[in-house]
Amino acid sequence: MTFITRTANINDLTFIDHLQKRNAEELAFFPKVVFEREIENRRIVLAEYNAEPCGYLYHGSLGNICRIHQACIQYDLRGQLYGAALVRDLIAICEASQTSTIKLRCGSDIDANQFWQAMGFVCEAVTQGGVRRMRDINHWVLNIQPQLFFFETEPSAKQKDASFWRKRGDLSASGFQRGLGLKRYREAVLAKKDPHG
Image 1: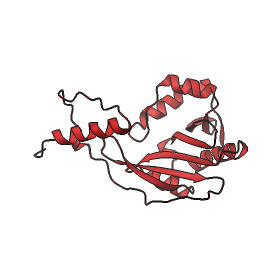
Image 2 (image 1 turned 30 degrees about the vertical axis):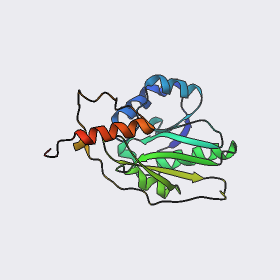
Image 3 (image 1 turned 120 degrees about the vertical axis):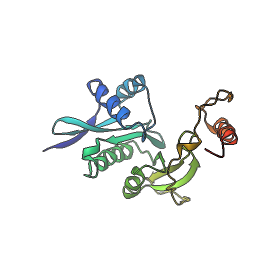
């Protein structure tokens, strides 16, 4: 039995998209065209078990900060250090490019929070997530280079709550908002919630 990590190529696109869709509740969604572009940019690290793809890690550009956009291992192979191998591979890539920090966001109800903590990441902030799940978002960071100032916070373990999510024809804002727009949309949805369920 062999396990390796390597840079993904275009032949891996179907697997990556399929694994993303199978884990849609835990991962942010990216259209297939994004994966095509990022494979070309060499920003997806693939895991192979017995010469078959079993997971991937999609990261952003290698500047001062590198962001992990998605990381996923097939369900039946989780907890066997394959995800850790992907992260170690990314750390080596970041060290070689003199990237000082790796960051990612993770929903508070996802088991992966324990994985990131075990990998040495610390929670630097907790923010509110979207209205559909009503969970928090933990912001994890791994400082490859020592930082002069760093503030750590307790990660949230809030579970998702879909009871607030309703399709309302009278809400003019879209659920696909960020920042202040998302905050206003969230307030509008909560204000319209029927208290009797």
